Amino acid sequence: GRRRRQQRGSGSKERSVRRLESNERERQRMHKLNNAFQALREAIPHVRTDRKLSKIETLTLAKNYIKALTSIILDMSGTCLPSGGGPSGASAARLLQCYQQHLEEEGEDGLTQYLTHMESFSQDS
Image (spheres, helix red, strand yellow):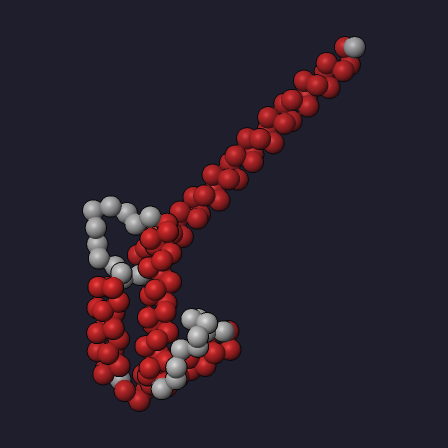
């Protein structure tokens, strides 16, 4: 009987240690996730408010921003946005190529058009 109690005691300690390690991993994971959300908040244009954007607001704004940028690039390249709403990997590479070519050809005028689109994007969101 005595041997079983010792095993239970050490098993309980092992479980406790595993739980603490698991909790620490989860805290680190959440810390990384929250840092990534903060970086995303700082990367997307939006009207500054007194409060921090929620995660869902951040994701929604980021999605709309990406769609707006995609639309701008497609407009610049004379292509239409696919009905699916987002570019595939191959078309995204093509969009980037078109955009870079457009920047080389148009220079500063392209930036002005981009800023105009971004103003309207910020007002829509």
